Image (cartoon, rainbow, N blue to C red; front, side, top):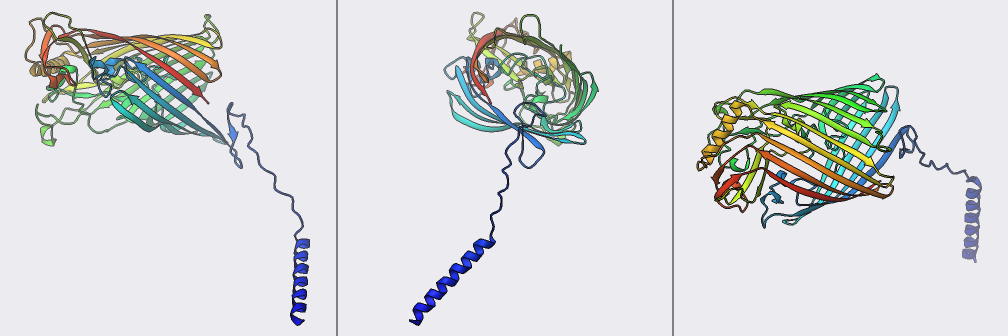
Length: 495
């Protein structure tokens, strides 16, 4: 009985306690949810990061390319004798290559008393497939930079480049004629605003970046492979950054820009034909080279709404990449059918360098100049076409030709009576692309490019398999200009 009474009293006490607690905990109004707000300060697509005054925009591109009779991204055969072997034109060659790319961008901006503070990042996820290789996946950060009070720090486009880089109206990455740093280069730069759309920018670029240099050719060690234009790249360590800058006028009618660059050529050591150089061998003195470029864009021309023309012209000495556009290849070559009786096949090659030297000589700087341009026409909101092209001229002075030809004739002693050696070359391209945009931000395009390698060697020479590479036999080859056509199909979704 006592136990029953205790249980009843205890239960009652517990119920009273619970009721008291509920009475004390009066209902409180929930905090309002802070929804994402649109930020209209910097254009479409920006939103405020909740709880901050920073705006952010996330976007990207998904792109699928297939190139026929060339390397990736509509690259002519002469630029690639590596994994795809297109230039050999035999059973080791891949006659098509494909790549799928996802590109993501993150752009943040915050208004401050010093102006807008901006951070930007752009990264690529690629999957590449060619016939002779298994699928290759890669991750590449293209542009990663911070902007504040007129300064830019990080990996961004060079102050030398135009806004369109080597893309005046094309998909191919190899339109010659001027500077290109579309995937960014480590730099620091400052831009001054003068009003009326006039700006000036000066910067320091990392000199060892692929977009800033081609090769310093040590032709003392190149004798074994100089037969296909191969050279031993003897760039030394990075000593000084490239000094770059531009003056730009950007208005409703279009754009005009003048650019300049200074680039130091710093070679390693002298060497013998069979061994690399060491400190005791000595070295050539470093030499500064440079480049200038003028660019023009004309908008809203009478041919149609949104039509425009883009063009640029460049000149460089000892800074060849500032005139070669998107390609950083140093050795260009292609084989085709024989051009004279008794020759197995014909070959054309070119060595694209910033400078050359041999043991005991000083650096001899390479001269280059070029032009590129594009005309872009919109047929209607869904269809557009561009015609584009570029040309590059590569010249070696008298001393450089003597150094180069001495290496070549030493490596290739059996030559015809009409043989002549001249490493100068001219590269040219002209292309056509048509795009269809059935819905906003989804574009399908077809591009074709005719290219030509105008080389200056004449006659024939007996070259070995070791000099030619791949499956080419030891035989007599004739020297001949080379040309070809490359085509690309692209599907692209912007978001």
